[in-house]
Length: 193
Image (cartoon, rainbow, N blue to C red; front, side):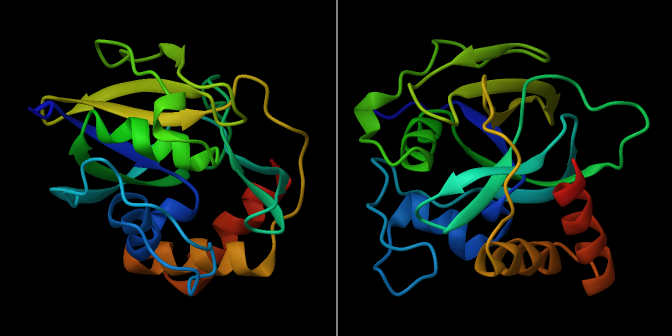
């Protein structure tokens, strides 16, 4: 029997885009900019989504083979008070689906990730996989459900994103109602962080 508990998975990178998020759940071929993905153990689509603010700093860093450039990374530390808000998109999914998503974020099999029995609470960070994106970071609950984002306990140094990665983020922001100028301002801020 599947785990009926729901959580808000808060995305801040390429998973702002619906098509990209769905690749983690239902799979896709290699005809997408992000390449092929296997379907999740539970391919149920998100029950809801909404625009949110991520309360942690996010920046472009490292070098992703998949994207041929830096990707969005998030440490567990809080967002400084003088920082621009980080645009996020919360997806209401089953808690167990986080295991597939974080494993695929790290290009690993699902069983490489281990979720804690309970979702981490606000401000808590739990290592769930041996990878670059290795943390579940708890946020303030929404509508009675825990909210979680992914983070890095040791983020790689800053690195510029590929044009393709930036375009996927901009398309996701457009889906959430940001204007092209607002999206570009946000992308420039991620470059500076």
